[in-house]
Length: 221
Image 1 (tube, one colour):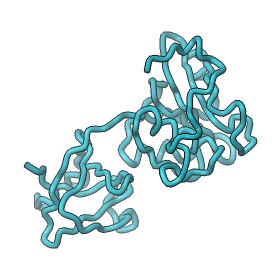
Image 2: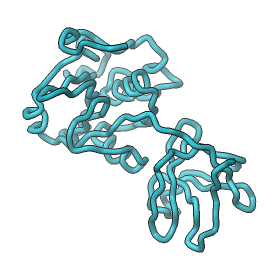
Image 3: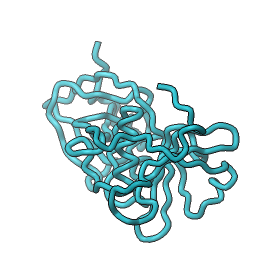
Image 4: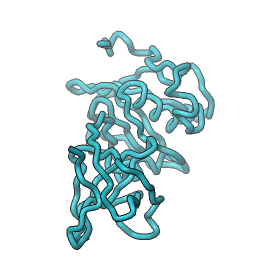
């Protein structure tokens, strides 16, 4: 559905009664800015961000998970700020010319769902970039998923929270026949070939080829 953003200023665009803002889909604290941006990304673009904890940690967490980041605001991106105790995040709805249209929750720090949450606002691009403690923007993008077969000897695959393949960064080991790999996510690091995978609605990194070029994942078909 096409939105006339200028005419929609002051109106709530999100549907807080939808599944995107409720458990089990969205388990972030209701009324908080992280809860809102996560729900908005899922509601509008069907992309699960998986953000938890404080807003100040969202930028690095998403970057580590393989999300594209940008210095400048893009339509459907999450603006991340690391000021104060907890930081703050906003959802960039649209950018045209010198205007940034955005929504947010808990902008008044009332820690509850209130009338101003999700209301469309705007700011000039010049002023947007002058905001204090702006870390950058996480780009919300529907990713293409490709099925890969797990071809390890025992059918096990290690899942890591970042591209730093270390024991402390290993989240879990799964036993399965296949796994979904994000198209174009391949990265070489430390002599290994890595890919970002989506497993149980969470993003992780996995080894596609070891340092000895032994395959752990092979594209199905």
